[in-house]
Structure formats: C-alpha cells, structure tokens
Length: 224
Image 1 (cartoon, rainbow, N blue to C red):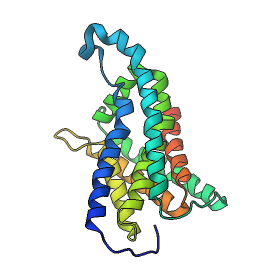
Image 2 (image 1 turned 90 degrees about the vertical axis):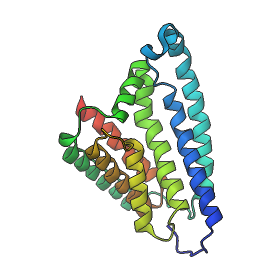
Image 3 (image 1 turned 120 degrees about the horizontal axis):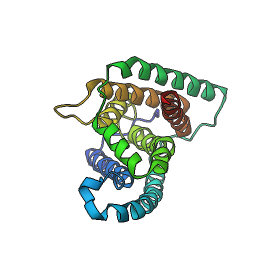
C-alpha cells in the first residue's frame, strides 16, 4: 500500500498478529450477544430479549471507536478523495460481487454456521439483523480486514496483502470444520479479494465499505 520499504521487525509483526486476533474477537462480540436461543436460556429468554439489544448497541459503539482509532493509526497513506474513477470502481466492484454471488449460490449448502447465526439474530431482533447486515458488518469488516490488516501485513507486497485479506475474510465467515460449506467459503474469499482490490485501487476505505453495503443490500432485495 506504500512505496516505503521499512526493515522487517519480528516483534512488531508479532504484536500486530496478536492485536489483530484480539480486534477480531472484539468485532464479533456485539452481535454474538444476540445469538442465544430460547432453548439455551429457558425462562430467562424474555428478559434477555429486552436487555440484549441494548447491550449489543452499546458494544457496537465501543467497538466502532476501537476499530476507527486503530485504523487511523494503521493506515500508511493519506485517504484519497472520491473521484469519477472511485465511483466507477464501486460500480464495477458491485457488479462483480453480484456475479460472484450468482455463480456460487446454486452450489452452496442450504445451511451453514454463518447463516444459522444470522437466522438466530433475526429471531431475536429483526431490526438489529438488518442494521447489522447493512451497516455494522460493512463498516466493521472493511476497517478490520482491509483498513487494518492491509496496513499491518505485507504492506509492500500488495498482491500478497490482497490475497491474504481475502482468504482470512473468507474463513472468518466459514470456519474450517467437518461439515463446512467450501463453496460458501470460496464465495467469501473471492468477495474479500474483490473488496481488498477496491481498497487498494481507491485508497479510500469508504469505497470498499460502499461495495460491501451494496452487495449486502442487493442480496436482500433480490432475495425478496
């Protein structure tokens, strides 16, 4: 992402690896609060439905602040303003994202762990499900997997940085397991690579956030 060629610092790299893992855990917490079921909570479920959305929203605010300030310190170049080229990149990225979806969805399993979690979230709070899919996920995930990761790792090797960002993004959505959906994982890896390319080309985190938002929004609209 930059032309500078700093010396490799193993301690700094180790710190970034640990910090990234911790940030990933923090990023998951707000929505994980809303994935408990009535079968798990029993008689406490009704009370949980009243309190959990509030806690989740508060944690989203805290998480947003942590990710934002980390990103501002991590980014190694000035953000480039939106131009006609930026909008064309967003349009092209959105079209390619839809192509990825349509090319892979027919071969996916009906259920997977990520879809199951979203369904549970929707049962507990439909409003927060929509808010999560359209706002929280695009912002949090782009800041973490593109804005932070691509400025911390393989900074001078953009191809590797883009590829690693996509792969980790994919497996974050489809963790490796005995019954994992490899086609679903592939679709997320390809989407992650696409979003990383958008960030690399535009030098503006808002561009890949826009593509991520449009991908999620159109996926909902076209599924109705």
